Image (cartoon, rainbow, N blue to C red; front, side, top):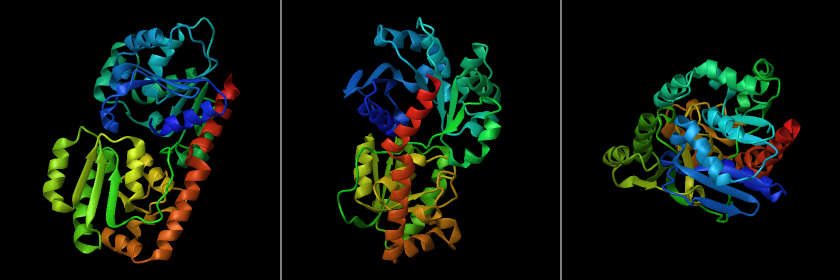
Length: 359
């Protein structure tokens, strides 16, 4: 179960029947294959198709598969996570005899409204179906959905602008709950870690260069990388670059990644856009985080080491590792951010409020 799934599970534990449509496999998240149906109390996860790309590129076929899997179940409200799933959900809801209100959750509504966010194959498929991609497609989604949810905290002050397209646009923090909490009081000394895909916006070339210097210029002796199973060629290059200090992991669940973070002295990321799951995961597991660039997800400056304020990233790491008080402050501030805004119960309550407002 991924991080947003923890918020859905909270809603189910709160007494609501929740059905989640998902893919059996998501290579970008290291998930090789999941069961067709899994049940967690009142949360049921149904996986009618192989990959999330299939659902985005062939929404008509995916909607038919979803309808077959769901049978005659009826729903009071629907939540579409990311607007590339919107055509699928719209087609699925046509099977219903009643009108079902629909909310669309986005990592960043402004980003969706202002740039090309869809990959090339999805754009081609959308255009073949008569829909434009990028800003035009977002505006159609915003106008035709019952509610838009943005998860980007930097957009809190821009809700009025977003409400031009949909007056029911709300902010709900992104869920980064790994489904477990720290149980060990100490981390392995000299171990750094990053978890996530090696997409361009995560700046992987910069990260490996920084790690090379960190291994040479700080007490760090090992760097753990938990990434997607698509990255074998990159992992080989990183092994050649970093040598014996490099420890890669693939095909891990979210809980397993959290377990590694629990055993890690600090996390480090070069992502300036996105990468929220790893940042929130470090906060949840009370693992201090070195941030190499400002990131809109981080609202409390005391929750991370601000690497750009030091002469070099290695200096930032050395400052962290040599100061127990700084480490304790970052753990406390980061965990506070997680509990208040990004835990399953915090996000679940906010999502429920939005969904109940459009029923």
